[in-house]
Image (cartoon, rainbow over all chains, first blue to last red; front, side):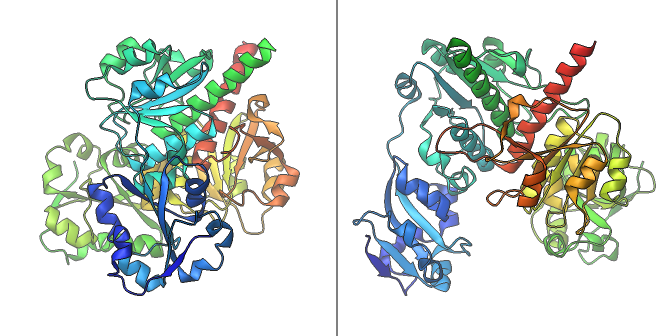
Amino acid sequence: MAEIIDIDDPGDARIAAYRDVRERDLVGRQGHFVAEGEVVLRVLLTRAVHRTCSLLVTAKRFDNLGHLLALVPAAVPVYRASSAVMDAIVGFHIHRGILALGERAPMPGAAELLDQLPEEALVVVGLGIANHDNVGGIFRNAAAFGAAGVLLDGASCDPLYRKAIRVSVGASLIVPSARIGASEDVVALLERHGFLPFALSPSGATPLAQLARPARAAILLGTEGPGLPAGVMARARTVTIPMAQGFDSLNVATTSGIALYHLSQAATRIRRAGD
Amino acid sequence: MAEIIDIDDPGDARIAAYRDVRERDLVGRQGHFVAEGEVVLRVLLTRAVHRTCSLLVTAKRFDNLGHLLALVPAAVPVYRASSAVMDAIVGFHIHRGILALGERAPMPGAAELLDQLPEEALVVVGLGIANHDNVGGIFRNAAAFGAAGVLLDGASCDPLYRKAIRVSVGASLIVPSARIGASEDVVALLERHGFLPFALSPSGATPLAQLARPARAAILLGTEGPGLPAGVMARARTVTIPMAQGFDSLNVATTSGIALYHLSQAATRIRRAGD
């Protein structure tokens, strides 16, 4: 069981990492991240590759969190504060009353991640996904449909940003992810690793339902509006999700969910046929 | 072309409806709604059943909005203000620099809406969808896959709440919707109108991929966590989206997208087979 430390002074040096959470969200953190909420913290404590450094919990929530606190390693301090002190530390009201500070595990390069994947694997590639809700949603869908990894370019959000973790329901803590280097040719990289690149776009040539599932497939997603870069569209197999006349607009995270659903179903059919 | 009225005083009575937008969002509006952004306003002006009462545009955006302003009926005033005046009126910074005030068209009852639908129709039913992003996402998916309507219970959000409209990319302004009465038995109502009710749930019995598409189908969605009420689950056909071990969690809007995708694909197959 972890050590419980009561905090009465918002200025206490021991909880300095929790100070002004929103401003730190904006500038980014060196080597650390903040996660919030009971469901997400359970994922962090039980399944994530990242180390938990500490927890900060309101006294009000504390008594009902026994099952969660039992998962905290003995060396990890649990700071307990009144709601008022916690709000003063954090800089706004933390509705869920429970936060954790995590230390990022080293992030592999894109080639390194692909090298480690099994023979049959599905990955999602996000290019220019600059919205935290969308990045979080993509990771949640990747976890739900068993994708082996998510690759993001430099223009995409940090999956360990607090809101991205929350929207992903902790999935961004467990689905392996990597950054694509600025000079890296992502289509060539995928093909070199045996991944068939499927570029999702309203203007794609092949309807999603007609896609057979290869052993290794990559779902490529671009920004809403401009979409994937022309150089990627020209060299990948372009895929469309047929929509109603006059409103051909899907959110990018929803697109990832539908494409992952189809390819995971297609994989099941392949396996059944091969039995 | 609409009349352009310059506003220099945030206290001007003519723009009173735009004052303190966030607070009015929270308490709700009697008979009106506020929509924001160019894409959404284009939908409002060209496709919505709701009347546009006025626009409020920053001077900075004004010059590049000629194509949109050309759609504004002559009787609808366009108020133009500096960014500073607009922020002072609205109470925070409107990033998109363009708002409209709309007047709600009368909302039909659920039975009345179902009565009007064609012989082949897909509807989405949301019970307890209390999050504006999720309601907006459900409408966006409903529009994308040609659903004929969305029914919401009293515990679900208002689809004409500003954020729901924005997340729906205007779809909540055009997809017909109705409120289910507090005493209304939704399963009986759907069946009386010939709609086969499919209750989506992680614990559902039939995998989504095995669902054939009837002429009239309803996709029932509950809150994340508690899910659909037991009384609904007991009487509808329960449907599951198979997921990976250990992370069987999908966002409710994403669930609507996957279910709508499958049923719209299934409808295409029916029509092809019947050709």
